[in-house]
Image (cartoon, rainbow, N blue to C red; front, side, top):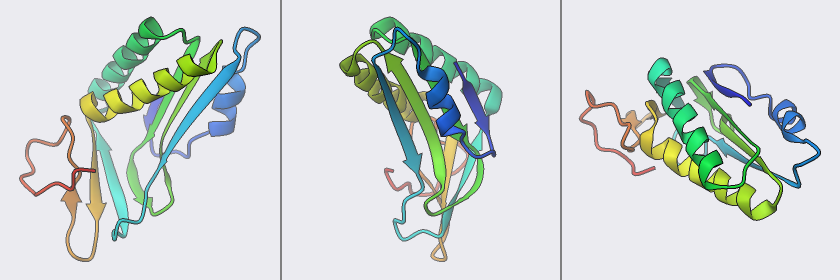
Length: 145
């Protein structure tokens, strides 16, 4: 299982290949990408040590709550263009519903709890996207994203 934060491209096919095992009947993949909401791109930052620890806790919670065999979480940081891969979550389980439920749980908890911040870049001005992990030093209005 992989938990990684970095600027590198997400090796999605490799993660999926690793998740496939004889006891697994479903692999659910979530791939978040930078969408065009009238922005030019996105800058993503993380307090890596803290974020990795929280992502590990989220993974453990998902595996305890759902009948999941593996959870992989990869989040990119740095400057990303429209259409660029932002985050991947891959959940493998014996049955599809557990894989879907686990994947949904992981992305919602990641957005709510992790020390990963997104800044939308635009000619009209940059703004930090909201979330509980929002950078406390920035008083800009958030986009609710």
